[in-house]
Length: 277
Image (cartoon, rainbow, N blue to C red):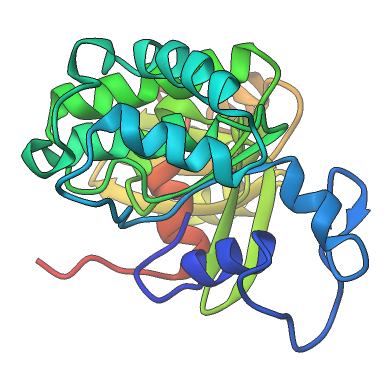
């Protein structure tokens, strides 16, 4: 994920062999793309951000055409095309001309054609961009079904909520650099493991300094006169330690709540992006 211009589409072009890296190597399924390009492309399915189709062709005609390009016989193309069009929810639309398709229907057709060669890796560039909520949910379900069948789904998006809903792993791109990459639950701990909100009736600057001196505290933010957000980074529950320190310092705790960071929080912290209202 990343902002517009971060390098998401460029990364996808590199992975798909559509662009050549100026340095470094790309490995897909343990194969070196530079020396095993043909083998890599045989296991890839690609859905670009803007899939182009012939308006006068039907969905089924497109699928058979793409199947033949991928080396399938006419019979194999026809059989697989019907199954895949059903799978992506276009079974009742297979004889309709694509010129009458909505944006969401074209996206689903793009996914169907990308699955014709039974790929091990399915790559999609902004698959839900421009879709309405119904279309987004349909694409999300299709991708989950693909993943459940053993296909690795690699997608780009600047929609943080969508990433959080569908992905198991996430990488954050910023100005062409991968600044964080991990399982989605771990990457939400990129800045901290969460935020502990404490309410202290007699909160003082000295007390805040003591809290900030704790080794597991990343930073603090004063939210109100008696309320402090404490960003922590620890594998264990540190609430008792924070409570003890405040009480021993003469504080009276009336609230102590732990909240996980959202992916949006992590993204803004990691990229240094600030929202200007």
